[in-house]
Each structure stands twice: as C-alpha cells, then as structure tokens.
Length: 307
Image 1 (tube, rainbow, N blue to C red):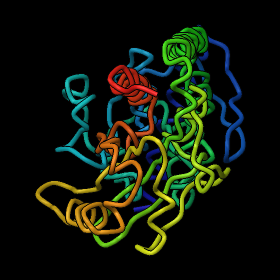
Image 2 (tube, one colour):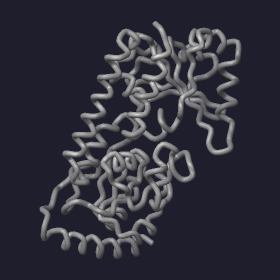
Image 3 (spheres, one colour):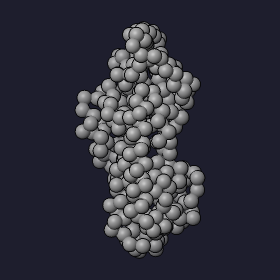
Image 4 (cartoon, rainbow, N blue to C red):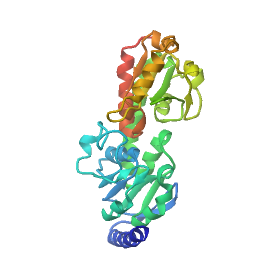
C-alpha cells in the first residue's frame, strides 16, 4: 500500500504544483516535521485532527475529508451542521492512507503527536503540514494552519475576535476571577485532575482565573486516587465525564467519588458548585470553535454565581 500511495502521491503532487505555479507564488511553510512548499491557495484539504477541523471551519473552509470526531456519529454536535458531505477518513490515530490518496488532496493538515510515523506516506500524497502537538497549543496551531491555507489575514481576524471574547469575559467577571477553579475528568474507573497546560486550563488562565494550590502547576494532568480527592476541591469545580455512546462507566465513577463521604465533604460539593460540563467543548475537541463556546459557557455559569 505504501508503494501505491507513494507513486500515486508523487504524480498528484507534481501535477498540482504545475497547475498552480502559473498564477501563484510558492510559499515555504515551516512546521513540526521540517518545511513544506505550498503553491497558491489549497482547495482540496484533508485534516487529520479534531482541532484542525475547527480551524478550517472557523476560516470558512469545509474540508474534503476529516478524521472522525472522538464523540459523535461521526461529528461533534457543535460542528455537525457544518460538516455535511465531508468524507470520514478514520480517526486521529489511524487515518486511512489509501482513502486519503484516492481523494487527491492538495494539502494535508495533521500533527506530529498523532501521525509522525505516517508523515512520509502522507507527504508523498500531497504537501503536508504538521503541528507539534494538541491541547494547550490551539492558538499556535491555528496560526500555522491559517498560514498553510494562505488565509493569514482571515486567521488574524479570527484570533482578534477570540481575544476580544477573552477580554470582554474577563472584564464582565471582575472579582469573580478570584474564585479558584478546579478542573477534572472522570473516566471509567479513573479520575484525572487537570492542571494549567491543557485546552481548558489555558483558557481559564487567559481569562485570569485563580486555581487551587494543588492544581496551580504548569503541567497537563495527573491521575489521582480516592484518598487524594481533596486535590479536586476549590471554589468552583468543573468536571467532564468521558462516557462514549451508550456507555455509563464514567458517570458511575463520578457518582462513586462525589457521592462518597469524602466527596460529600468537598467544599465545592457542599456549596453546590460542582458542575458537569460538556466534554467535547471543554476537552476532546480542542479547537477554536469549542474554545469560544467554552468562554460563553463560563459567562453563563458565572452570571449565576456570587463571590
């Protein structure tokens, strides 16, 4: 299959470059895997991350194909109305290379942390640009993709809009940002505290929220045991439950922890400030559309809270 893709990709890439060189200069895009030459404005884009899908949609671009959303059939609820007709090409960890080649893309967008091993095959199909990772790098990744797409001015406008939403929310909340925000994820049989260097953690930090001392770390996350449950405490607790379609294991874990004697003794539980939030928005999507929805969610919830 690799030989097929390599041969097919070489033909496609050469043809595309020749067609576009007439009216558009070549651009060299530096990225996590080196540098890639792109001619003109790509039209047929394949995207290999959930985060990247939202970058395209925010820029007004519908991809030819995209990896399946982690939750949804096949797309997250908050983007599914914009993804009609988009081809599913596997998931982030197992994209279908043969199908990608058959679609004759003129740009592939992915990430080193998920697809490093198949970068050579992908780049033989079409010019390929990779981010270093996901999670806390949403804004940097958005800029890189906008550059690759020849949409830098549109990208700058979108980021300005996002920054305005951050600043307006920060101003509206005022002293409420002094409330210490706790953040965690419940999975079947597992609980993970989220620190500052993750998607939601970065946004909370941008708004200016305080974090409990136990969570005020420049790390991504850590698994915790029941006897460590106090690290989940704070003034407000946002948590997401990782149930997938038809599953309830994460909800069961949530109940076991928060309804236990130790859980009932948490400050956030006593004051009824423990909130189950939408996991795709707060965690799994990781894109700019979800980020704006997360900011709006925070505004709505804090309008109802007092210091």
